[in-house]
Image 1 (spheres, rainbow, N blue to C red):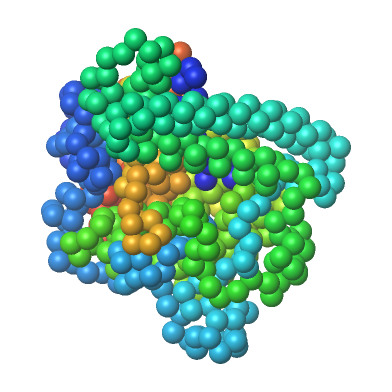
Image 2: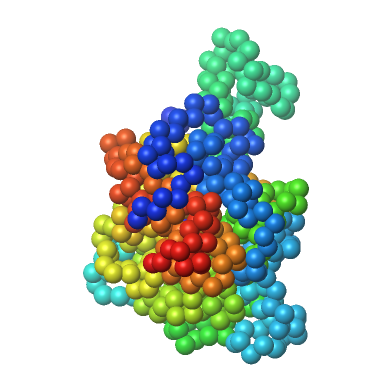
Length: 538
């Protein structure tokens, strides 16, 4: 579950193709002034839609595209399948863009449209009522999958991750205990339940215990705006690492048992159910992704998605752990067979025992003219190196792509310059195609709420939104053409960028993806129009 991972790293530091389409001449891009002041909260909530040349942040020129190109043009409706965790189908900013299978009668327990799936009104749920899962490396060891070399590699990786998770859990528990104790000490001293940073700074005391408590709490303000907020974040960290040990890395755990199928038998179908909504309180990933693509534009609430005239098909197949190759393969085929023209795949893992099933599904999507947009992953790794696979992919190593319908997307941070690549983002001159906004993205969350999340999981749906708009306005363009348009129309940057947050690992931005570019909606629509008219040919 590499792409979905929550990475509370900051607290661990606490010591307790040259297409001339850009909006200004290409030679001017690298003279964009660096933004000195931090983005306001309002700016941060919207930065992915802004224009690099006008706003000095590496957005996708979404606002400019709607104002200057799209205007009142409606286009045709495009179905985008979100293969992910369950989506809040009743969210106030998504309820009008959820796909409905009009050939299916709700709740009658029958497969009315004979597509092989019962009561699939808004998509399908391949997980049944399961949620927690192992990582694939743990399943390999539990079930004895693969050869001896694969099992040896899985065991070594598992043991290392268990050690790291155990240490992190213990550290977070120590931090939690220290902050809770300091919080109670200060509350008792002040005689009130709520206090501010200014209240702490005003405390004058010779009591060593109180001095230590004040010092601990003042450190916490570097990570959050209030102590209750930081306590919640620390508790989330404890929960995250506890779940890693109890479920993800636990060789004895079997999260699939309640589903009732054999997940390593592709012919064993008929499992799951027709309700692809979210199940757990923290099952938020799919909802966040869906909002980035197509949250209702211009309704005066929440956020605006990149694309309009989109219907979101929810395919629930990513658990709290690694997805199964079988579910990925069947999920892709379900989306293709039921009308999706774009598939968003914001997930990934390091092991794929049945990768062939997924490769066949990708080819099936290509044969049926469906574009797949995949997240590059959040491990700060070069995916071109053989030790860093990220499945699903569309090529083995750095070899030829198996089909021309997959775009793999790395993530940008909201600051243009040497630190514009998000520190967590994977990269690769062969295995990553393009970069898009993915750090600190504000979008929809379950219960008609909204939050910031970061990951290549957020960058992929930004590109899915571009793809959906192109397919809406220019429906005759093929998936392969749309892919080429997105890659060739992006903004080329020749700056060196820091990778993995490590200043010693700096490379030319042009050399860390296949395109060397930032996805850009404004330019993509210009090129799409030229290709559609025949003025530009691939």
